Length: 559
Image (tube, rainbow, N blue to C red; front, top):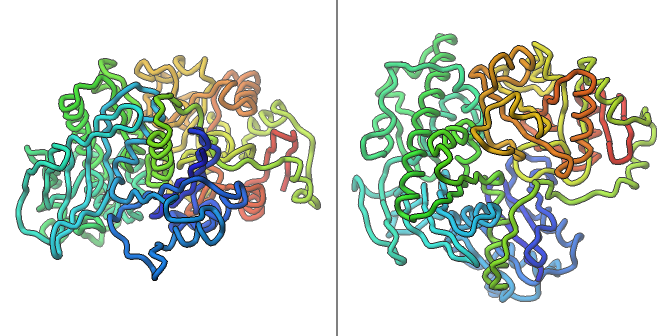
């Protein structure tokens, strides 16, 4: 049974599930080269090239109702899919716009390998719920009790409401769940407000997270959440569904013409919202366990990409409960959640298929690379030669196999550097045209990780979802990948997960006694991750990167 999944909003994506297994996943931005792109028409055309037809299409979105285009009673995507031949009729098309948070939960649960779990979803705005004329609700935080084959019982929902003047209201939902209606911005919206104040795009919360390490406690900043765990509406002005903004009229110190003072304010706001939202997440984690009685928890939604907070949960749980953080937790992942949920619903199977790696992009045939490399300087190479080039303080791009799903580069579309270089962050930030304060990740041989980092008893962290503390005296050895707060967003790697990348790091260890490489995404600031070899060559031509390594064919392209 072939099921296609579509996610329609920002970070739009398309995936294909065949008999429960993911055959590929791709975000629209990788094909259009437009960051956060929506409307996955190129993705659907790509799907059509990959497979002539599918049995069903599952569509993730945030709207519960969408009027048909014309007498066909089809919406835009149903009509497009039918006209290009993916499906024949509307009976093959399943809309799941009323289940946005449930689809986040589905992906996380099915990927976790747990038999059952509490699912905590924390998002900017999930499904839009029409509550009356001029009154709309938006999912902020949800808790589900998840089990096989496709049981996602809602237990609790915090719903932000636009268009009413009531402070808050609790009701019972259709399945007995607690519905908490408020006009207070949710956890993710408060983080968006801080991100906006720091002069970043609302989808660039990762920059705010990085900036938070430079901030300190500031007495001018009020308490961000009250005793009822609701955000401070004096400080955060709700503007649903767009988000929230800081109240600059009341807190006049937020605006200043003094650049140094403004920079400090932004750092302190980032620090405050990071610390306070971490506390709110720990409160919700405890609530999820209390309400479901589960011993396992999965976390997804946009806030789950906060790798600093994710590490704090490990300390909070203290190995008393089992935790899984979904790596494709942004809205792009809901295409996978929709397709997987529909497959389990129709197949009625309890078969667990935990995620093994994130190399889910389409595969490209390396034998076709020859034409693209004509006229370029190409040398035969191997991992030993590449490790030598990196040791000489050169940035090397690596391109191989299927691209990574989600925002993290994990060795198939990466820029690599020597982590020992003291000013390495500055050098690579300039090449990538990124802000000076932003941290970089590292990839370490799995067998060596406990000598360098404190994983808080995790066995591995293959998806780069935690900013972990480094062990004593480690920062001096690998300063380029240690952030201001003594943490590193680390990826562990073993031979089974990525043999070529593993062998390269092993070769670097032989030369330097350092089992780690500086690893950042193969793109420039503001651009999507490289998808094709053409994209990689274009980056080589338009940046200061001089080396591109193709391990599958053991070739090195030199600018």
